[in-house]
Amino acid sequence: MESDSLVQSAASVAPIAGDELKRRRFLQHAGGVLAGAMASAATGAFAQGESASPAAAQAQAGPEYPPGVPPWSKTPGKPISKHPYGMPSPFEKDVALDVRPTDKQYWSSSARSPLQDLDGIITPNGLFYQRHHGGVPAIDPAQHRLMIHGKVEKPWLFTMEDLRRFPSVSRIHFLECSGNPGYGVHGKTAAQANGLVSCAEWTGVPLKTVFEEIGVDTSAKWVVAEGADAAALTRSIPMEKCLDDALLVYSQNGERLRPEQGYPLRLLVPGFEGNMNVKWLRRLHVVDAPAYSREETSKYTDLQADGKARQFTFYMEAKSIITSPSGGQKIPKGVCEIRGIAWSGHGKISHVDVSVDGGRNWRRAELQLPVLTKALTRFRLLWEWDGKPAVIVSRATDETGYVQPSLEELVRLRSLNGTYHNNAMTPWRIAENGELTNAYA
Ligand SMILES: Nc1nc2c(c(=O)[nH]1)N[C@H]1C(S)=C(S)[C@@H](COP(=O)(O)O)O[C@H]1N2
Ligand SMILES: [Mo]
Image (tube, rainbow, N blue to C red; front, side):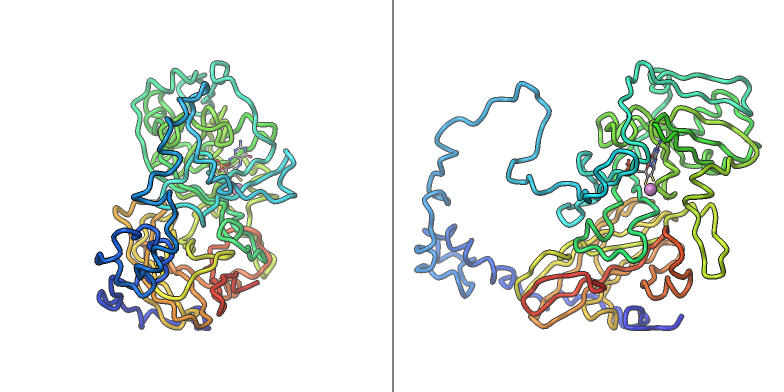
């Protein structure tokens, strides 16, 4: 492939040198904070940093810092709430879904996960991205039924209780909207740039288990899934996928699905585009041909340069994004741990490379273990920012050998006619004052 500034070859990928980063450098910019903590222990090993002199420490010490006794230690805390469902600290109130003004109506709406504020690989349920074609229905699980009909020994109506009696599994998988982020969208923050992706531990019953139990004609080629929302979202799923890793899901991160995620039942087709993961699932029609529904003709096809469209583009290709530091944030000079997430609908992430010079040179990031298939994978790379303008960007490679493209490469390949499956890299520009912005903005 041709190379431009963002897509140079990986020849220069180098591991980070361990002693390149001396221990006490981490503390250079923590001087102000440490000073307080060190008020009466300023001669300890940590106080070797330039700014943590005993005098500076004394000047900045507050009575609430250790070893002083803060006000919140002097009286008992609040009792357990009358509505005992845990909430985050009120100090975290700004960590919230990103909702655009135009996304607040009910018929077609979306909200982005605040990737820049999250750690690890699991998205908390309240911060899981949302995409609804007809609002969020309020479904009483006692009244909800799943119908399985068509090429089956006999048609079935399952209650939620019936489905929970099947042997269950729990698996960690990402979910991503194929419109994440679309084209010509260069979000200011990580959420705005790529926040229609999240990851959870899903619990439910493998579709294969249910199909085997009720006697489905597995030579049938498609299963048409229908949601119980006002949009009656309908997608055709290949039988092969149904017999592979598709799940009928009723729980997410240990608790029942949220209404926004399809309560009480959703289909999960790991690695396939978001819209095929039908929420509020009420019907599975086992058939020989796809339904050619609205969501696989008018929507979710990819118009190419020659006027033809790609259809049934199920797989979410490998992607990654640096979430910290990222757009809207500001960093001090010195040591900086670059953190981000990578994922692939084809399986495991094999490696992530990070460039701090706009794609000319690449270093291999460390992956958080275990690396799971079709799940978010956390990567980290230590770097020392010298205070000069820089462009940082990450590039994921999955176990098939597929390499995440730059936007220029992707557009060269597929044109700008399409809306979906933009898995290009997201470069962040760091200005001299440490502020980060989307390099395309
Ligand atoms: N019934 C139904 N299923 C649906 C949708 C919908 O609007 N109705 N939205 C789809 C789309 S486009 C996506 S990206 C995912 C979003 O899932 P989430 O809201 O749980 O993140 O659900 C899919 N399943
Ligand atoms: Mo979507």
